Image 1: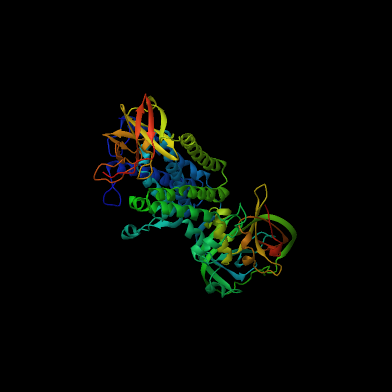
Image 2: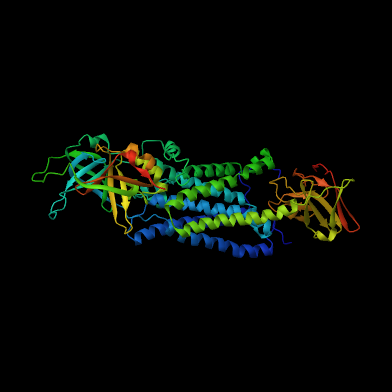
Length: 365
Length: 248
């Protein structure tokens, strides 16, 4: 809402969210690398430590990206998932950081070990990322090597999968860098949202990166099955949630000659909630509070969340995504906040709801 | 009210949901963390041996830098020498400090990587030594084993012999191109359905290295018809790189 910008508005719930997120990611990374080392020791085969870390971070980013992309459609299908959605951007930033470490590696300070006269262990103290491990220590600069080594651009199977990874990471970087509300406000919600829809371009690039890279080298049917299952899962939940919206948008209502539109019986709108209608190209959320009706744009000014899936609390519509509030009568956020959405004239005649066009412009309180 | 607002108390239904969903997600991450490493091709047979010291005749070919090491106590009929391919630090051929002594007997020190019959030493310095007495003459010209048509993959001998796991295939293509273009001996890795492997250094019809001419064919299935020549324990495949044929 309207307030001074801080890096992160920490709340207890955000701290718990990030703690659980870090615990899950850490468990995966430590288990992946620990099991890799244990397995190699059990089979008496030396392990390529850097390679194991590169695989661990890359796969962690890929798995977490699936979870991040699942939350949106799942929240549309089941409101319980709003508990994961409100801080989803932290998950997205974590995906970028994991992808960055997959590419760049890390080298922690060796001092704690050298002070004790010990040599710092390579695992997990230090590892080369994919960029350096596969492209450095040779006759070209790593970035030059990355972009010039494989020139099979016209061959599907040999296509340089690394470049698809670069595209994916670049998209994730833009998303992470603009995830703060500062950018949301200054870019405006529609532009910001359009930019963030590029995550699907990034996801497509990363699917190509995995299919043309990891799956060609690690030819396990189980691994291919896992990757395919992730792709099918995301497609399915997006199609199902998209279908619901398409059903609403597919039957846009048009006003009669007086500028009013009949929306059906008032009983079809649950008390304290809304029903969403598509009116002449715009989604409108019509809320019922007992016998009173209110109509507001369905689009939250924060991240364009679906206000019609929100609830009425203390006379305000609360957006289900991040809790932004708008007064039912005016569409304005309560002071000191300044967000506001357009409202529509609405009435009930003989038990049927009617809404008038055009909308009233947004009014600040 | 059964509606989640992140700055208000958590509704009971949401608390119940998180009570089973978060442990489920953590469990999924644990299962994947235990399972996915086993699906990776990261346990190749190549290995790195402790720092070793070798003495032998330093040669620049066939197929790249190598050292001819006497094999004392061999049974009759076996080669009197082992050829160990050489690479420099990183993805390079041995530095000039080493190669300036080619044709001389030298003592080398470095990491030795081995994968089956293929051995590569990573070295940066060579110390000239006197030629040992009473050694049989090395087979510098090689022995032709005749023409062969082989299908395999062009790999860089250093990574494949143990630096990388796997040091072959698509994800390693960029690294292999760096190594081979840097002068690490290019090797044609061939295996039959029974799992028997053969690693042959690649040379052209004049016996020169082909490194800069095969970069477009690295890390993919390739068919080569040429003459196989045995140099002690090292096999070489002699063919014009222009006749190499990519499969698929």
